[in-house]
Length: 124
Length: 244
Image 1: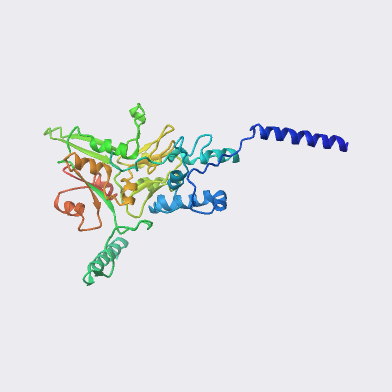
Image 2: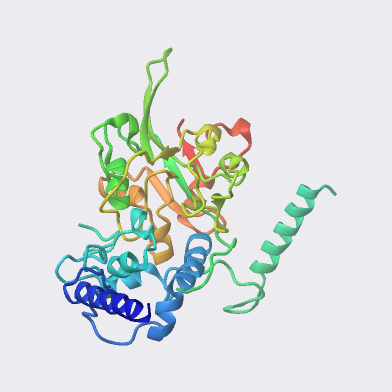
């Protein structure tokens, strides 16, 4: 009985190991193309970026404060991929992690996922 | 003294105080000044437009084009469902044959019916008088579309792509003229439609602060005969028309 359980555990471990090695498990791709200091410490951003964004969004929409450091356009400007120009896509900074965590990423149904080449309002 | 009369008196008193200079360059209450970057909007200013239909050219749609470009409104190929933040209206007096043209957009009412009917509080009036939709709380019920007497609101029926970074828009939300709120917050001091009208040489749209007696718009409002559209509804719109 004990031997059976051990064998089963070994098989499970081996299968999981192979799956991991062959890349079947989706892993987040965290590409930092512009290394430097983020607006908060990495641990804070990983855990609480949504709270910061939620707070900032109300300040922006209701009170017109658009210069604060916790703004979504700031995230996009820094973290957009140099290849696709976007934070979305399979290896996009936002999407790869959200896919891994299984959390829906609604922001970019409305918000631009690419930094503005020319700021809106600039004359063509 | 009724509530309105008292408010009027207080407003006058405040204005008188604000005007009273203690010493050259020092005032008891600051007159409306440009907001610092990071500072919340206040009721010191009230943004508005003056549209002079005598200067507005029939057939010219530069303001509409500029609005669409500024806010990233794209043509879906089906005009019936296209979002429309500003539109040109042509008027003709059947008796005399006099023709006029003027743009109509959100009138940024002081008492907006769209805000009254919104069940979620998504439709709101900002402190500086701009009426907006908070798309985060909009559920797309379109009560405001029904309530607006100026037909100023549109509904987004389809998924969108390539929005402007400063103008987020998406399917399932109601939207309308924002008075180029992102430009105002940036300190541009003008709207895309007014800029386009001026550069087209018509100068039919004047943007400015209605609360500042020294602003261009206030001066023109004092000089030109003007009125609010559907003044009978007493919504006190921030957009006023001359020559209609």
